[in-house]
Image (cartoon, rainbow, N blue to C red; front, side, top):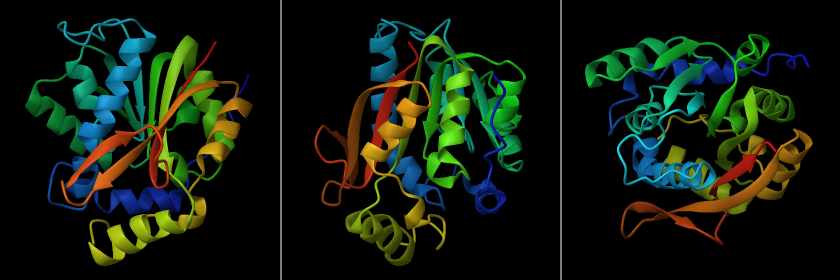
Length: 247
């Protein structure tokens, strides 16, 4: 099977290249991701441990697993996955993100294979992974179905993909666009396009059409009083995350 036409959207890539230098500034333009990261890592590590029967209390519990962090940015997820023992490839279509990620990993003493490339190029090269992290990427690609189909091609049989994105409804417009971009100014205006958001049912349908089996989905909910994110079994109204497997 050949990979689909390149799904990279140059306009979306340009948005993140413009912010590349700020990836590791917890008070910079990526402050929302730094705040969200503990919640994301909780979900990711639990799902991987469950699927591959790993004990998170042991040293390097993900040793032996090859993991792709697609749209890795500055490495906010790649680094903790490497610390947990996974062999990590971090890929991003934004060229300026890669040296930022490489330098920070070097400073942390971590061996991560960062590449300026696309999912399609990796698939054409015959790359295969046990785990794919596809986090906050699908709402920025030109062809969501083609992108997910390419991710399926990159997965080993028995592999898993964790995919997060934003729901599309009036609440998500108020929270992610008006709140995060216009009022709080956590992100530059125009970072997200509400019409590109995807409902959970739409995402599950796309995942199934790509040849994967969805097995879990949860919401990631921000509490403005506690000023932190948490996972929810029922509230998928804005941010949410899914797990699917390749049988």
